[in-house]
Image (tube, rainbow, N blue to C red; front, top):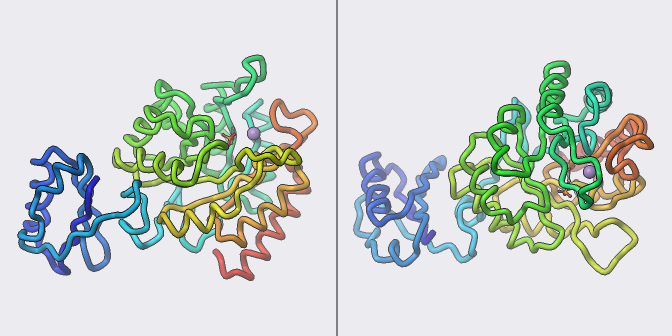
Amino acid sequence: MSDMVVMKKGATEEEIERVVKKIEEAGCRADISRGKYKTVIGAIGDREKVETIPFEAFPGVETIVAISTPYKLVSREYQPEDTVINVNGIQIGGNNFTIIAGPCSVETKEQLLETAKIVKAAGGAILRGGAFKPRTSPYSFQGLGEAGLKFLAEVKDATGLPIVTEVMDIRDVNLVAKFADILQIGARNMQNFQLLTEVGKIKKPVLLKRSFGCTVEELLMAAEYISKEGNKEIILCERGIRTFEPSARNTLDISAIPIVRLKSHLPIIVDPSHASGKRELVEPLSLAALAAGAHGVMIEVHPHPEEALCDGSQSLTANSFSQTMAKIQALAKALGKK
Ligand code: PEP
Ligand code: MN
């Protein structure tokens, strides 16, 4: 990607088309973003090829702006307005604070349905649950796979809650996309560039989790891989990073929230469950995320955490989830969030 070509207010379709054609002739791809007043065309591809094009000489072109960051399409410079993603009528981004909750893993249909009812009753908007699980040990529960996806679809039908679930393998992208409303890319796959490219080609939102070993800039570069393929519906997620501090599972990088918001137009949510690994920390970290400007949280909930096949110690019960939700709602209201 090289620069963005800002068209004049009122530039005609022919003028826009001429710029697009020129970019394509140079072997690059044009990303058209139609703002309220002006159209901006991003030239994606080899910088050297694009730099030779005298865009200023084209009718309808107002100015050429070079984007200073290594990520382009996901940068605030490229798109000043927040991206707001609509998932079956639920808005993520902008002034919205969205609650995603559910079990770490789909275990049985009953467990999932019971959890979904807890999530819905407390005011959660989206149901999470892993069918393909990235586990540190190959001997741990790996998820139910396709059977788990089917349970997710059934529970979605029963409750109306949209579904977010992880895809780990490029071979499963189409299968998971058939069932999921949002496809999750887990922390361990944040730099699986082939997987990022594949989810960039589908027409469903992607929840991209920051790797525990990657910088904010690397997270935004990963998002750029998805955006570059045409999928602009990306939700970023801060889920804690590895530091020298052993008292929690990870260290929630709270600064990442305002930093991402300054640098990118994409929504950013927080996963306080994987960040902390401890049930008692989930509520304070959720409130901190909201106060720091996050667009939502993703919380693990289990009706019987002591029986959970995965991450029971960080899962909230029905009671603790509804208490946490009440506090989140009170703070959201005080902050003027929807
Ligand atoms: C998850 O959210 O199910 C998960 C495995 O989290 P992470 O990829 O952040 O470890
Ligand atoms: Mn988990």
